[in-house]
Length: 117
Image (tube, rainbow, N blue to C red):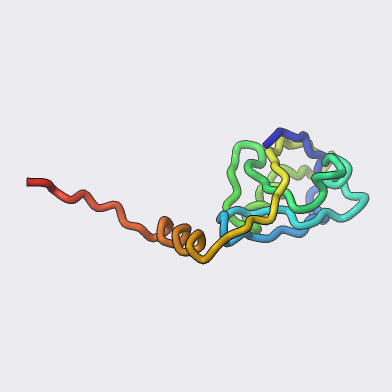
């Protein structure tokens, strides 16, 4: 992961990104960026698609909607704002049924303190 300073369009203007959610890793990611947008121009060309967004400013987004809202929160009316974003290139994970079950189990596993006598 590394930090990128992303320039944003004016408030109310489209961001030009397509966001999705990875059910396996439980993280939002940018599937694609529209060519010519400020975000596209701010990213390295190898990172304009399929990138994890780990943090936008001081916030860690947990959904595609939250990711978009985080970017919109930094947009200004009068000038283009710049925000620090931590990203990482997304790789398709090879998962097995066991991995999927284990990931689901860890999401719902209650923490129970069993007394020992």
